[in-house]
Length: 447
Image 1 (cartoon, rainbow, N blue to C red):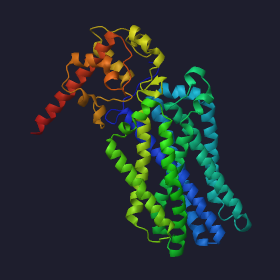
Image 2 (image 1 turned 60 degrees about the horizontal axis):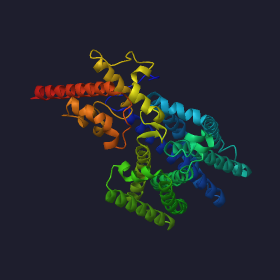
Image 3 (image 1 turned 90 degrees about the horizontal axis):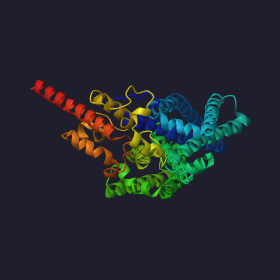
């Protein structure tokens, strides 16, 4: 262990990363990408039709795109760095070494994106008349930069689940230009546009007062939606087929749904979104608000589902076939099993398990190998030890640990020797029993 470990307790370390990542992706995709594309599209139509009302609506949207992307978007982006760096420092360290220049380039693109949204918003009055086209081109450049930010980050994220032959070549291009990069980029692009339409359609109905203007915007949104939904579905299928074979088999499992439920929910929802696109293209000024709200909600859930599945199907790895989810390198596993892990931990005060330090050693091993996904007690009951091994004996836990990756393929193998297995089992059994006794005392005191 070369880094300190932090336990976020009841929330759970893995849950915290997941919540921050999903929130950031929703904001980035819906507003920075989808919202920007639709905003600039409305300005284009406004200039073409010389419609000052639509131009004013696009200007109003630009204010909120600016506010949301530079506050919530930026803060959640920093939040991802904060949570992943302190919870999974080994994974982030490896990714930085692999993608140093890609991340640096992404930072430059993001800075350009911020500059362009500031220029776009503050030049509405200055670039009028013949300069309107210059303002529109600035908006197009903003859309391109927002999209390029996603393209670069997607290359890094895609490599986590399919790094190609990087482990053999150690080449940046082998990792970045992996099979899943293009289909996942396309899926995210069309999902972002769909999500943007879903969120802005109700806004248009409420804030665009002129009926003909609402019809114009509705038709524009309908075109984008009818283009995006089929391409989103096609790129999603393509993405699935580029995944490693084992990961492909875990897609439905990663969603937490049964095969039937997964198919029905996703197919039905995509059909309803397509129906909304047809209604919008038909030019209905008063399109069903319930359907637009459903589309907005489902688009958000679809993106969340995609992120959750992407995280789950690469288990037991955090970088596929290279580093396990707990930061242990695959190449180091057999050595740890023979020699033990504690003796190589620079921050551990315990080098060898004894009868006197057994529980303390077990706690350190839990923090080193389990805490990135599991907690003693927490909101996600399926990953809380107080629930998972409640009623188990210490011997049962000790027997399970060396074989857990065979029983549950999403779990990394335990990287430690026999004494460390017993220490971890003793610690888990001790704290789980302590939780049960505490829960019993609280229940008795309430009677």
